[in-house]
Image (cartoon, rainbow, N blue to C red; front, side):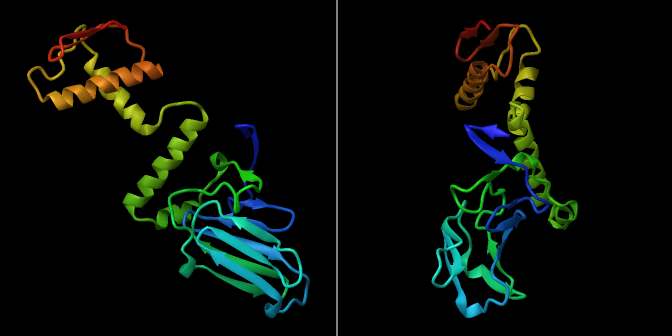
Length: 214
C-alpha cells in the first residue's frame, strides 16, 4: 500500500517487519527487536545504547546495525537487551504510549501498513473491559479512515444531527443555553463543509434566528 508517496509493507506475523539487518515485532505495549550477529559473539562485544527516543545496536569496532530515532518514545527503565544463543541480540522496548501501533522501529526505515495489523485475540481478552473497548474502537476508526469513511465519533455526531433534522424545521433548544445552541450550530456547519451529511431540508435555529438552506 502506498500513502503520501511512501510504500507501506504488510506486517509479519508479529505485526512488525522482517528487514535485511534485523526484524521487529510488536504488541500495543511492547516492541521486540531481533538483531542477528556472528555465531559465537560474546556479550562484551555488543554495543547497546538506549535513550527515550533513540536506539543504537551493533558490534564494537563496526558500523552500528541500528542507529536512529525511534518511531515513538519508550520507557527506558522498562527496556532491556539480551544475547540469545550467541547468535542474535534481542531487545525489548516498552512503549510510552501503549495505545498506538508503530509504523517502523526507527524513523526513515520501511514502514508497516498498520491497517493490516491483527492483534492477537488472546491479548485483547486479557485487557480490562474499558481498555479493550478503547482498543477495538481505535482499530475500527483505523479501518474507517483507510476507506475514507467517518470515525465512530463522527458517526455518532451524524446520527444525532440526523435526528435533529427529522422535521422540516428544526427548533434547536428554543430559549435554551446559548452555549449549547452555538456548539450544535457550529457542528452542523462543520459537517456540512465536510460534506459528510447531505441536508435536504432547511434548518432553523430559533435562538439565532438563522435559516440554513442546504
